[in-house]
Length: 322
Image 1 (cartoon, helix red, strand yellow):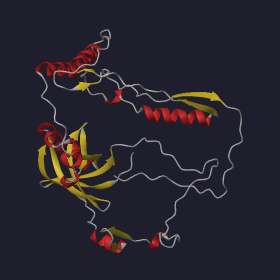
Image 2: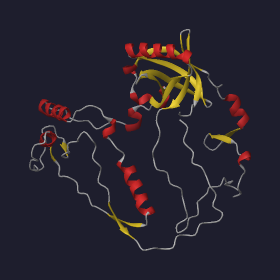
Image 3: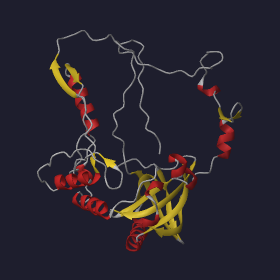
Image 4: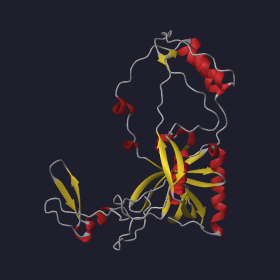
């Protein structure tokens, strides 16, 4: 069974449900170490005083907050005193419509499981009540000295806790993007064709149809190099498609999505709305891999391997805490 990252209880009203919390997701990203070129010597980083250039022991390091030319130094004891106390309860204070929560607020997912047989019945009752009403329970709790805003929802026959971003952590679009360029209103014909294209490309959500092809290629590359194969990279030059009339681009896209013969390219000309577009390929139910350099493996002759450094130290990778 997976490791419990938090134990406590979920409460709503006077009902208390002992639960354990488990990570619902995992990161499969391939992580590399750093080595000096031509050797098998690992690269290590040191904590160095920028004024003296001398290495500083970890126990002599404190944290400081930069105020722009001035820093406020705080000690570990001061931070520990300010940290919130560990929470033992996820107290649901409000129930809201799950569909009312903008997905932009969702941060990390965790599974909640009943801790014992006595917790099974109220756990199931809360799940059934939220599933029937499509409600989510809003709560706050503390984990690893950090306070989280969260919602508990019913899914897959169990309770799922979602940590959320606080309201002031979600950036306003205008602050990020500024004023977007104005566009003329779409014509009724353009909108009808765009809706037709959306419908033609629509289907049921199937997460198993999508794959991280980059990770697959990197793993295959590592396997080939481990077997002693040389890897030759051939760069492929991509050419942009000609700009065509917006309506023609939409029609071609709809035709392709329906499996019709690919029509001939239309010469560039201004559209009725003044907008231009590149012809787009219809997406299949499974995503297609983007163009990347072609990789060819050839057997290489034996070459002496770099000598390992006797001072090489082992290390363990850390997973980022949510």
